Amino acid sequence: MTTTAKATFTEEIVQTAGVQVQLRKGGQGEPLLVIPSELGVPSWLNAHQELAGNFTVYVPSLPGFGLSSRPDWITNVRDMAAWVTWFVRDMGLPQPLNVIGFSMGGWIAAEIATMNSSIFKKMVLVSPGGLKPSEGETWDYFVNSGKEAFEQAFHDQTQAPEYAQYYGKEWEPEEAEQVEINREMAARILWKPYMKSHTLAPLLGGVDTETLLVWGREDRIIPANTCQLFESAIKGAKSHIFDGCGHMPEMEKPLEFAAVVSKFLG
Image 1 (cartoon, one colour):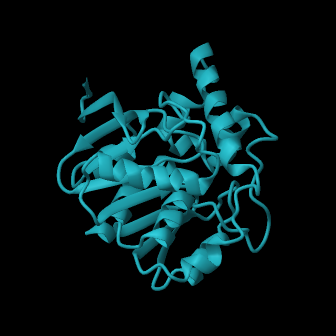
Image 2 (cartoon, one colour):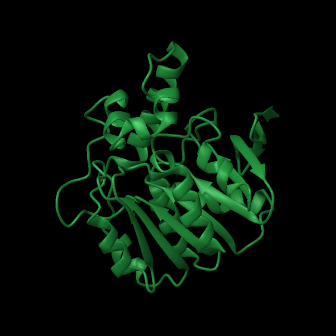
């Protein structure tokens, strides 16, 4: 168990859904599942802590990311989506439950909703991948370095204290190795076709889960115009755009982000 001035949360390796999973958990109230991005999740973040005031927040490192084991059979986003549904069942999480998916994690959540819309009570998709932007292109995470990816993900690094803590420093060898491990797994499931699906858009038409889309207007990873595509595809979806913010509003605007999400989730 890890204790900070603000919070107490657990971090452990659990055997569940056929995988050894690095799991962070904290808070109180009804469960809230967090599906991380292709960048992984470095720690228990300020946004997690803010949300933990109202929810029991579950933050697993997905298979192949962080300290979680890497099964050979997960080779694409739909495989990962199937695994997440298995994780929800094996962890005994009640259904329907609330979910937040970040970037790749948003794509995974959306895929799950297309397969079983009854699994989620409400769904928050934060800068999700899966659809081709109407203008511009998704930034290439694999041609560029991990360090460059984190630099591109933030509009204003000075407004995100966690940037300096985790990304804007000289990495220890094990930290640099972890970034590359995450990139390798992301490449396996996102490379073909890169960060988009030919089937997701039409399948989203069958989703009736109450959905909130969250984006940073200055997102340089997945252009903010993609928000409109998701909003149009998912029946009744709403959106919130943060000005002066990039691809990771949960780190650039953690208090505002948590407030918007908490209000939506009720």
